[in-house]
Image (cartoon, rainbow, N blue to C red):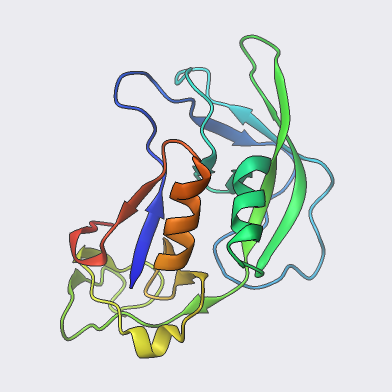
Length: 185
């Protein structure tokens, strides 16, 4: 069983939002290793219009995982993450966070069962930017991989049930796991 991973934060408080990525323009959603690594550390500013709690995961043009989340993913056996030192700055308070890494997930898998899924392909091809109203994953094509990006919609991060269970048992807060058929993205 697979799930779509996201992190929307607590319902009773605002979550911080990412702003500008200051020193890299690399494509973070291709699933391929970078020919040249980004400048270290990657500098990311929080969006001053969206103050709030820091989340264990941010996915907005760049994927950031907290060190705590990365440790839990390592324990779960996820081994396809390239990590880059990152400093997240709050331009309003001047506070900096160095407990995040910019993460490049290595692996894009075409495993959507398009015959069973409900979707629209705005580019004309059901790859990269497909809009799903209900996703069905062909688990034989996912090949028991623990974490990857969905080739049909590269913004979707797919995790195996084993990873979901470990992250939940680790107490990583505010993570959302959607059953594919319930995911809209």
